[in-house]
Length: 155
Image (tube, rainbow, N blue to C red; front, side, top):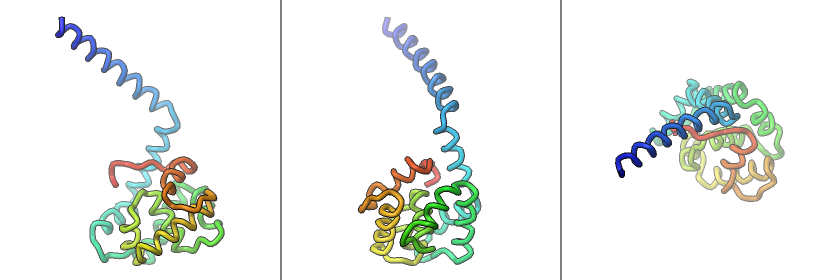
């Protein structure tokens, strides 16, 4: 009897898994995840992931330009909003993009050769400019919600 129930539950589980996969593939979330995965597979994203693991290896100006150009390809509305937001400098644009990639503040500080406090202040400015929030605590979730950034297993 237990074996029969176990088999029935296994079959039901397999059926539900298939249904979930079908629903996800039909939804916008799936395309957003694929877009973020493609973004994270770009040469600059891969380079940043390598640099992140090497403390005291900041990004070059060429890296920053490539990051902005790649973001323009995948997330043009996000980049436009960030570049045209009040009080957001070019360094702030980089902080915003790295935040959207779900890099931690300490990693962003190392990559951009900033202090942790500077990164925190820039994140607050971005939250205020884009979402009218005075704290940076929910910045990543707001970026996910408004610009369809989704964390991938690469981070």
